[in-house]
Length: 258
Ligand code: COA
Image 1 (cartoon, rainbow, N blue to C red):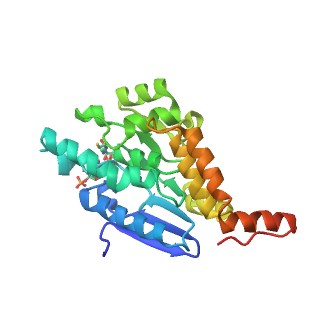
Image 2: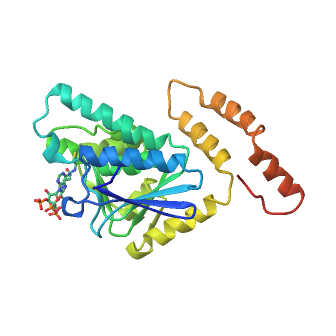
Image 3: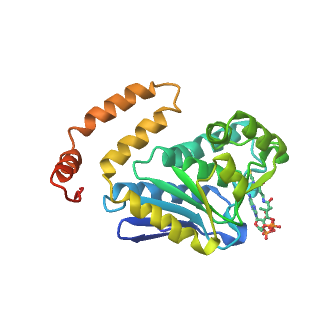
């Protein structure tokens, strides 16, 4: 698949996906969502790729939301379909990816943009970033998981306030609220995320995939997270990485994971 709306760059074990519609502040239209699905799927299947960083092009926006021009005339049924397909192809897909995904929020992360950042495994923002879920100002609600993931990250009261006011919060506020892990200068954003990625890639990617599954289970009412943890913990003992990790420790050397 040839990409028109995104750029994908891979250097050794780290891949960077850049959403590249700067004149529309990287708004997520249907084809961008399809391209992102394809890119995440391919990178996840590539065993060389150990961390994926997602960011927006330009200095102004990560993603300014779903593309409003595309859904302005939708019916009730088409609205539901938009949310369902989007969640399946991108937002749930990213959350459940085996490869760690870091959102590098380089500017506005609004609506679907903040929802994409929240579906990522964790977030780093640049000092100029602004975050919000402004949907109710358009007469709609967040439809890409925002009403579910925002309370998980910042608590119910703050999520209620953010969604009801349709307001934006600064990067520093987002850090205080637990929505982003770090705030750095814009030119430092990608190098900083790559530095964290560098710490991740030293570890067993098989074990990291199991940890992602177990942590996500904490937020899935249909399963018991402790049971998933027990299952994933047990499975680790059957992996080559476990043999290598424990042997390397006992031999006082660095592990060489698969
Ligand atoms: N969907 C479609 N187009 C969008 C968009 C979106 N979510 N966000 C921005 N754009 C487009 C604008 O329409 C404009 O296009 P144009 O030049 O063809 O008119 C371009 O991106 C630049 O945006 P503009 O509004 O001129 O920039 P600004 O600096 O004045 O304002 C924002 C920046 C982010 C405050 C403003 O663009 C905005 O409020 N966007 C919508 C945010 C939103 O409600 N998102 C949730 C959607 S559910």
